[in-house]
Image (cartoon, rainbow, N blue to C red; front, side, top):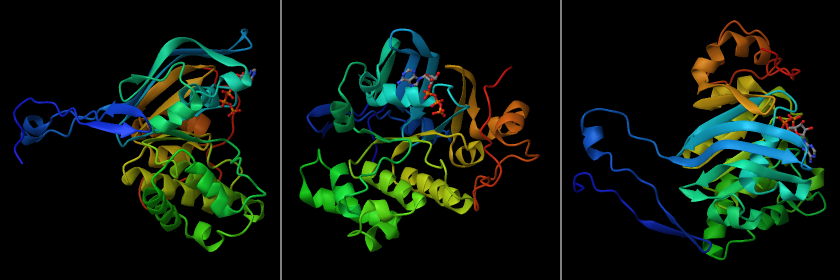
Amino acid sequence: MVRPRGRRDHRQVAVSGWRLPQREVSTSNYRDRGHPPILTCVLSVRGLQVSYGGSVRAVRDISVEVPESGIVAVLGSNGAGKTTLLRAVSGCLRGVGGRIDAGTIEFCGHRLNGRSPAAIVGAGVVQAPEGRQVFTRLTVDENLRIGAFGRKDRAEKARTRARVHELFPILHDRRHERAGLLSGGQQQMLAIGRALMAAPRLLLLDEPSLGLAPQVVTQIGHVVRAINEQGTAVLLVEQNAAMALGVAARAVVLTVGSVSLSGTADDLARDERVRELYLGGAASPPRVDGQLAGVGGAGARLDRWVR
Ligand code: ATP
């Protein structure tokens, strides 16, 4: 199909009451000249500042962008502000005494600042929280159904569940069992599956590898990539830098609430400071394909990065 030259496609998509413009830049002429396609951003965070209780400045200055269908990793040591960044994007600061003091958060060109967590989920931004937080007394299936709570269309929900089962066959096999009986890795899969049930366009993952065995971390890395290949953008917060840099296209490093480094995952994996502090001094960058690198020994949990 030949598109009229230079015309933008402003198709509207209804997402739970919001009408979001599907941001697509006409790239036909550009592509014809052999250039890569232009990526538009689903998420754009600019100059973010966040404090808790009016006094603890947790985020001082963070700017980060997630391109359509991209994976961006956020690295940093304990207390660097990674979780706070995700809370700000998902609208969950108020419940823990936090607030945005400055900066903007835009999703598909729409401002998220001040919106409720439910409205943000409805718009297509869904978080799988740190520590899984599955409902241990409910069954695996009930946990998944909770994830789709805001969606009306039964057939769509059934299709999403089938997709989640395809991604995590164990969640199908154990669908009638209590979630509390699953292993840590299986609970992490359930937490990601529950988030996927809301049909996110942007998935926020907070430390999915936390406390998991190396093989399970590798599996989680493959799953993150598979989710992304199916069209969902991912903002991946991780202390396991090897896994994160193995799956992400771009990454930022946070140091005491600010972005201290940013670039492509490959460049950061080659950066001496990142290698020394986050990759356990590995001589070679993590491998991106095949066996995801890293997972054993790498991704050390380090103290604050003093530059
Ligand atoms: P971790 O990897 O340990 O989770 P993080 O990079 O995710 O660290 P945050 O949890 O965002 O860091 O914390 C950033 C700063 O904000 C820390 O100094 C932390 O103590 C503080 N903080 C986080 N949550 C709260 C809260 N609810 N009330 C007060 N201070 C908080």
